[in-house]
Length: 301
Image 1 (tube, rainbow, N blue to C red):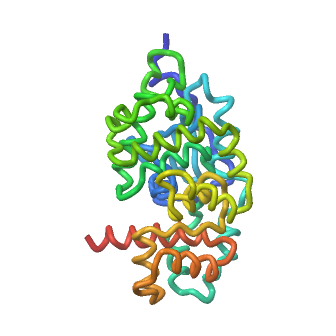
Image 2: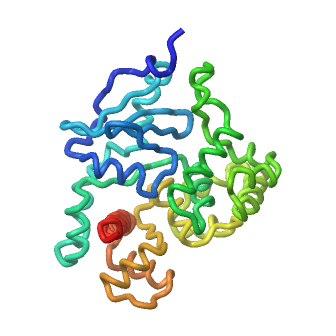
């Protein structure tokens, strides 16, 4: 029987990704939107979402993908949805107010073609409930432990045992809080456990929230244990495609103070400014600002 290492498909082009550089692909996959992608060798990223596993790499012609052969038929369509390939992200970014905003123009120039992923809504909520006061590498560790300890294998063969889907919210509701804490969640285990019990008792609640208008969806999410405005906006931006959401974390507070003069502004004030200044695509602008500020910090270190 073939091992996992020799049962992957040949590399295939991912539509609508021409010109996407390795650096922009890395920022898209590993820049705080998602927490299940891991750098391999030679610029390859390997990741999982829902019941899918894939490898991605940037080439001269755009992004190429490969998947375990048994999953490949479903992976092609799933990747198109996950990468939102039906959207022209460069054209969308061109409608942002970069012509009158020199800093935003610099951000767009630094990460041409940056896009927002469209992840499973429930998984996005779980990932960002793990994110409070943690860096990306730590969030990825927590999410990986939740998957391997409490999620089912994505492929049935023993060779694929390393690939697990994330546990569903009803599955998490049955996990004792002590076992969640063993996944390095700390105080977040209490919030995840309470949220899981609520969602298990209210089937369809997440689907209704994902489909609701932005303001209502955000208000609903903020009723969940551990979900504040920043987490709610992240879940809506990266899990529901609500491009008007403008998540505010320490990086955005920093860039809005340094680049836009919003010194000592609170998160709610900054979020309101972001939605007003950047318009209905504020969330796309936010991701450019976020990526640029983190890259500047790395250069200065």
